[in-house]
Length: 561
Image 1 (spheres, one colour):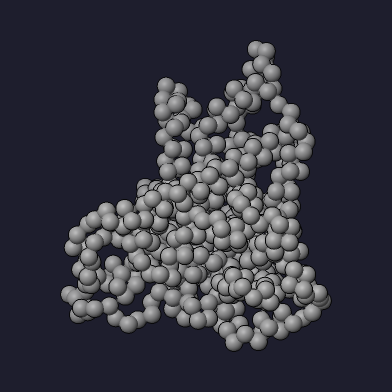
Image 2 (tube, rainbow, N blue to C red):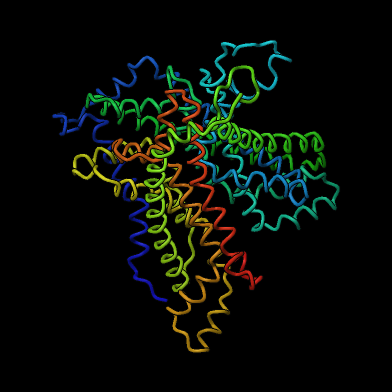
């Protein structure tokens, strides 16, 4: 089927247009040019104001350390799990535990983690007073600690499923089984063999997703608001605070800080790349040295234990959200509430349903537009026998590599100047920027793997290219398309900063409402909104699994696409 040649151009514009426009809208006020406030640059005063702020040093340090440690921790856990257990029954169990967690929004996972480890949280209640002697919560700053350790741990727990699934997809492209068989036949133990023969090829495949995790962890806002320190907060949170200030002068300060945040992420990516090169040189020497074992048994245990802890922490946190949403009176140190009630759901249910409708509408429209563009691009590429190059992959990942705090404030300023900051559509098109890359990554392999002999047979029977596309190819790809839709919806549901800034605070979704409740500390209300947010992301995944099995119940080969 011949699609309009404009589709790839429209996709590129949808991906990069808001990013470029947002960066331009950040650069101008960062150098003192904001005509709406009667200011005309150039001037370095906004940068001076940022560096005069007393908290700039700790804020920068928090952004860098949490980003680097969260990325490094997630990657090490995934490498240990995959190296030590891939292909085993335990690995398949761990994969089943971790896979659903990919769809859990970051904010919901962060709330659950906070409810679990806080001094008045579930862990403290389960061991008190028997093991601790506590009959009231201790005055320990565990959540929102000044070093950002809890925030780093929360990010690791959420990023492990993402990197694990990306690694699993890459395993099938590097013939890992054959490499392992050869290495182990030469006497190498399991983890040593995997690190020496499989990991170099795997890392080349997952490098860009690792960079995305690093950029995201350094600039995340919703998780930082929930788990990060308040005084001073990470730089990304402070940027949002300055953007929300009614004094327009603070917008200049926020823009300057946004460029500093961008510079930090670029610097961290360069530092990470230097680390890759040095590790590659050291790894080459280690591989040539011929050592055949490296603490394999303890490393296997550590990897499986850390992976299991990541899954258990998120599941237990979600269970905590469920209990708090139904909790009546729940005194410390009781492990469970004295009574369960629907009072919180009755109180917050109607408002949360209205917010759910807005969230679903934004997610469905953004995903629908993104799906049409993605399928159009893939069909066009196949028709002209084109392949996405490494440069194309960088363009695809670019909106995910540039921190949201670097271009969304500028995009908001531009929209205000254009008078287009009202309504839900700017939010939808901004969500599209983040939904498109994930739709493409979800669909490109199943689309290329489709057996083209089906099209040849259909064409021989007289079917037109249009009929082959709509009546044969798309129905046969129902499962991967539904999975891609579920991924797109989950990405949209989890968007916090894009909704808050581009919506100008007038568009409320479950994520913005849940994060706004964080400052109030009403755990029952947070439980209701956190569960609604999780359900909004999980239900599409459940439908993506169930619908092909129901529709193709009499066609075994089509149930999984």
